[in-house]
Image (cartoon, rainbow, N blue to C red; front, side, top):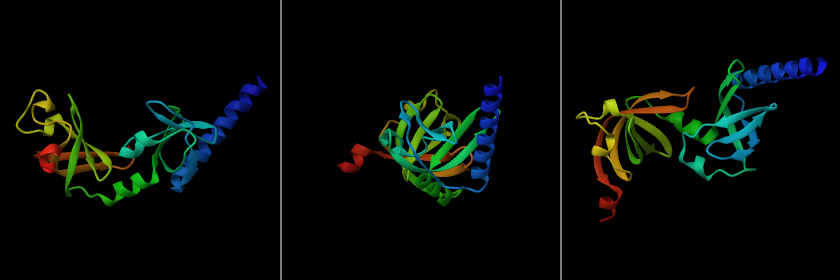
Length: 175
């Protein structure tokens, strides 16, 4: 029984330290533990997951050291999310209402994912005009779009778009 109590106390102390690091906006230098569909690191003995907001997420490898910031620390749900510092800096430079260009990276039933300055942003299907049953009716991977940033959620590392205009496909720009 004493071991269980010590482990519980250790976890509670670890979460308190993590919350303190988050409040102080400390940059953590951590090594990637594992990369499968998600990338994991360890902070104070707690496994954390790295946000996939930026396009470099797929290039990460096990053992690689990263500079990270804590996005969310929830002891109650045993959830720890982090973001790469360069991605956070890019997000902080963006502004709601800012017009920008991007490239369609994925077309899903719920909307399209657009690469904007190396960050992934979502244009929800409800923002696509005229109304379509599926975004693939209008967009395909590689299309270049002009859009407006409608919301930036730094706490969840999410960028939302609106007023998207298809300019051309990547192939049309090369010709």
